Image (cartoon, rainbow, N blue to C red; front, side, top):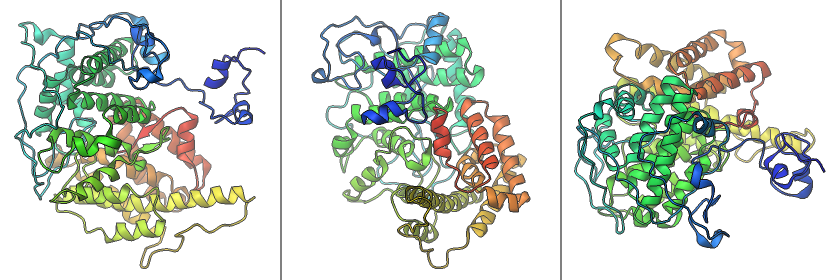
Length: 546
């Protein structure tokens, strides 16, 4: 048997001939095994992480590892190597992250000059430590939130002291990139004002975690130079620094390390690389499924811990990702059920990643599992929140988009069921339209009108400080799949095309280019049942739309 060189991962590993059928090869199907596909997963580390007793392991469990050899730990807090081979490693031959809990001496995270200890947040909004999205205005204070630190849960590690800043620190390339990230790149990742408390919070988190600081710099390097050798060297250095920090804190992990891992996922999603499997690794590392109540006790829980878990929960939502590789873990619903046991109940106010009210995210978290009738009824009955006028228009965009998404998912279920029955028409549970629910054409009209209003509003000179434009990506994608309606109403398509052009001009990263490519493919398909998730998986990508 000839070894397969272009086949799926299973056939390569077993040295079998692969027919290279997509999405799953027939050789794997005949053997009753799950085809691992043709894409190489993103490499989170290299060098010594590829060998040793935990080589290839997802978690540091000796019972799951056969080897007993160990390797020395490199000090990755030093300056990044200029080797282009390492840059190619980060981009061309990725592999899964390796976490080794070996006791090792890892240099303390470097401090950030002028870092503030804590930042004041408006209303009930919280500092952001992931791919940050923040509300412009939050009217209702959330119990327990504020600039003062709260006690950490038992067993949590105290943040390491910041290293003194050297006189030549301003010449450090990482520091220059980090400062530029705070003033420019960070504005791509949230939906509030350009000058807010978020910048000072990122300084604080970078002081607690060297990995957080280096990953932030790597994101800015990628935004500046794309997949250039220099940018990929920063990415490679960030991956190694994150791994070293995990090793150095294997028994007492500070929550800032989780935030650094979430930022690494942000770097993946900007490149349209799969990242949901890494969310699962982070969740498993911090045992969110079994220890969530320990990490977030009813009283005295750590604010940064709760915020980081919220960030991960939003990234984990079904509606947040196109072409999802790993299934949603349901972290948001688990978190809200835990809050039901608190004396104050579920937290109100705005969640900072999406800029959406938490009560609205409760509906989005159920959209993939609930019936269309139930989801639509909840969406139309949702009372909303108080915010500035542009913010309220953005929420309307998301409400109409969620209605269209619920109906699109129902159409896909019908199409899949009809295909299984040889084209016979089938009924899907919850198929009946909710009472007083408007037709899809009316919903689409209201959505495009809201997009038009918000897109024009943020262009006004008085609103140049607003970043609400970033929140229109999800409405753009879902509306762009309603191809028959766009063909019937060219003026609606013109509105969406104008928005697409603005995203392409502003956002040069790979994810936006992939979204544009898939929406063009949907238009050429000419139907309203185009499977954009399948199109993303065929390309070996995951695209975040939150």
